[in-house]
Image (cartoon, rainbow over all chains, first blue to last red):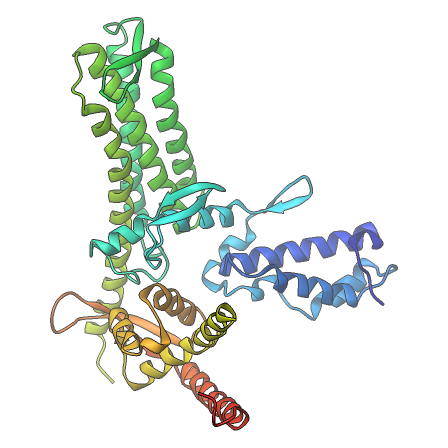
Length: 308
Length: 114
């Protein structure tokens, strides 16, 4: 009475096992994205031990019944509405971008971790942990929020989303307004001294910064509209703020170089600065909004209640 | 061998940090940086803020501690942590296990060593 591989089961039984294990994986990963793979492997091995090559889908159902509902594997009570959302499959591999999203976001906003330089966002290089900077500057406590952005209101998310939207609108609007006055070739590259050393066509010079700004802003808008987890929403808005600030900065430098040359040598550096400052301000603002909401909840309740 | 010993000591520390936090909270409710200060008064535990805060999150998720914002006599409100009933029971188990393990190891280790 043991199977070693899913291929030993018939199609219906195999599908039931796959569906169940996927649901459990999602539930577990949602409550703790870093849970060890061995926990899930143990469950699979345990389930396989109760099955044999000629087990039917009904046998699988009985075996599964011993473990209970997939959601019981995660401390998922407050997130239970998320569990009904679909999980995708790519080349037969289940994936859950909510989890990878949260993992990535925990690199750019993790006030509990004092490391400012964090390894590998999107699997390459390093990234800045803005949360650690905010803690170092005494702008927020490491434990100011139970869950990052977990108590942030819908309104505050929309307000934060306005930042990348406005920066993207600036790039698009100024392009449309100034298109006829701009030369056919626009500055597209500056050397370390701030002198233009490369040109591109008007459209190409516009599309690059606009692409940065609009793509990331659309992703952030999608995350808000699709009601992704609070952490993912906040993270994508922060990321979009940075990329759209980068786009707006490059575009502003392009316009300044084309319309009011010569450009001051320090301007390219100044245009890059908002790429760091804007997402920092947005993430910090969201985090403080979350802290404020938690405080109102606890402090008002306490004042209202009689002490026992 | 030195490396081996270092990792052994850090393994032990890792295992007892939770007990240390629960033990402190059993005395009185505390806020985060207060806990960090109390724990860093014991340098042999080698606990930093970077380990305390993630652990507090985990203990809260596990339901052994709870937290709430409270007005502070000086300065802004603070998030205070306290032991739950389940946490108090958990701490008792930990304390009992710790004592029996440490008794057993003490009786095994030769007196002359250390």
